[in-house]
Figure 1 (cartoon, rainbow, N blue to C red):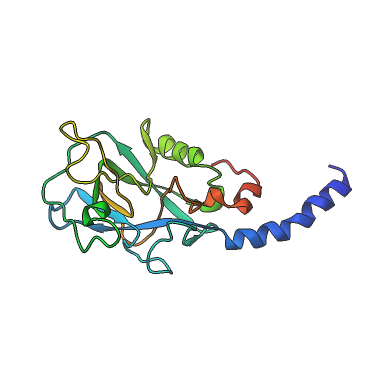
Figure 2: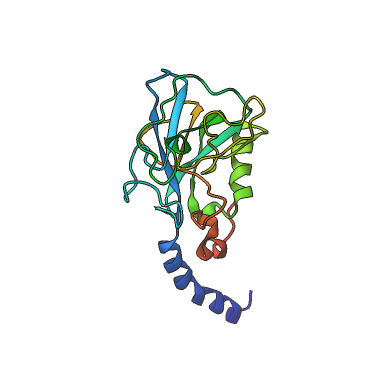
Length: 200
């Protein structure tokens, strides 16, 4: 590489590094569900452990993209909603069941990956599929289906902010989760797009 070109490239690195320091992605935590016992987990914005902000930021991201978190991987297979799932708390802006949907599948903790390595939703989905098999992808903010919808011919109505799924997750870490309709993902940040591509 010519020295002049190398010098130009190196001159941009401090600016990229500064932008990377500001880049944030959305993370969720988890909690158990005592209503149905083992086998069901509740994951969401305010799950444990709490983020530095106390919850997630579903619009701009809450967690430094330089940090390595496990991917929240999901396989949606249409399994029926178990009985006894709790629709906790008041509904805030939406009815309470909006915040306690059933994802009709299983979640697993994926590889621990720095957010800066997640260059696109497709790249994150591919990591889940590589680790767990076809049909696995990165979980998404709207994966929860509201109670009474999506069954018996009733169109599915998706909620947000949290959902139930089968699985077991540690409560000592946050997880990377996607949001398809906001800029809350690490790959939405220009600094991430400028970082060198790194393969696993």
